Image 1 (cartoon, rainbow, N blue to C red):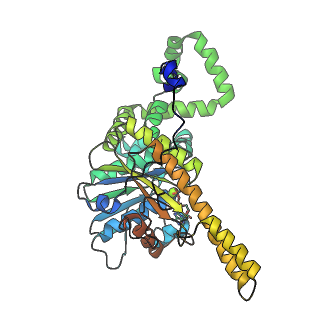
Image 2 (cartoon, rainbow, N blue to C red; image 1 turned 90 degrees about the horizontal axis):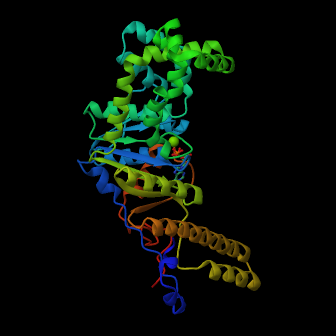
Image 3 (cartoon, protein in one colour; image 1 turned 90 degrees about the vertical axis):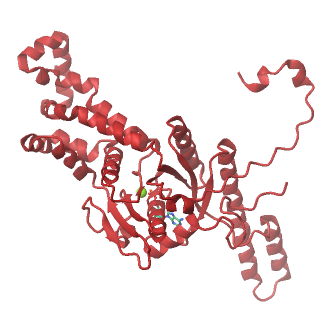
Length: 419
Ligand SMILES: Nc1ncnc2c1ncn2[C@@H]1O[C@H](COP(=O)(O)OP(=O)(O)O)[C@@H](O)[C@H]1O
Ligand SMILES: [Mg+2]
């Protein structure tokens, strides 16, 4: 039932004329400089929809933390090639490499997740050499370890657990996979263990696990028919592969679940912070909203929202309407440079329009999540693919809140409307 419907009818009829809509709440400032410098901060996870800047934000935050004196490792996932190159990540070696950051007080290390290698390492660590060899050679395992939806997310968590266990790092910054949904990262461990432990797989592999013919008798004739149909659809070889894989994995099963649970718990421990990244676009912000809600349900700590690739105008003193009007006047007056001046005014008007749209989207997010702190990061002129670019981004992420050329606080794209 809606609130209005709950109110007594009388009151509804005697309502005063609707007052002007209240101005949207101001977003709280997000102090990432303090967050990454705090010795109690041990893990920062950057989440968000695909393409919003998770990898870039992770690398920039790690750089800022290293410059602030911490020993940092950034776990990147599928970084763009040029960014990887500039971090010295030319080959996938699944181990952190030191990045030379001239003048940094701390250390920056970077690594690129190799999902298959990480999976292989778990298998090797949890079974005998012969059994490991069997699993690694199994075609079903090979498919699962390189392409199962969720494997990358699961392995990212796995790697995070490993990095954390070494106690070698003051701070681990974790990038998340380019999933469709930011929630995939949180869902992966469960999905993975549910899948490996799933009814379907259990059924399919029951005969093998119960031991040949005896097993067949156990599961009954109905299942045999079912199994034959499945065999036809999936192919007998695949079934035998799955079967062999799951029996080989059986010894590790407890291990898998436990690990998934342990890593999930790691994300809830004090010292872990989530940074949600979004661009000022409806889809990305909707995804950020889902994620924020989910973190709160899971009681996982949210540092705030990075609103990446905003388009603040060079000056906020001239409105779009006035800039457009001025462009008209300049053109009418004519003379040397009139075209150029009118063009510049039109660009400004356009830019103000974009900024206003972005601000509206940000306001909508803040109205729905007033407790979530926000940091707006302007779009750089080109891609961010080297240390210099990362440093500019790091400054935008961690610089003082009101130290911008236009004086607009970094929680916003445009100045707040006067009240
Ligand atoms: N603030 C920014 N200004 C300009 N380009 C950016 C900015 N943030 C990210 N990019 C670019 O956007 C692209 C996607 O960023 P990336 O970090 O790979 O996103 P994700 O990891 O979320 O998929 C990259 O080409 C990156 O250089
Ligand atoms: Mg990425």
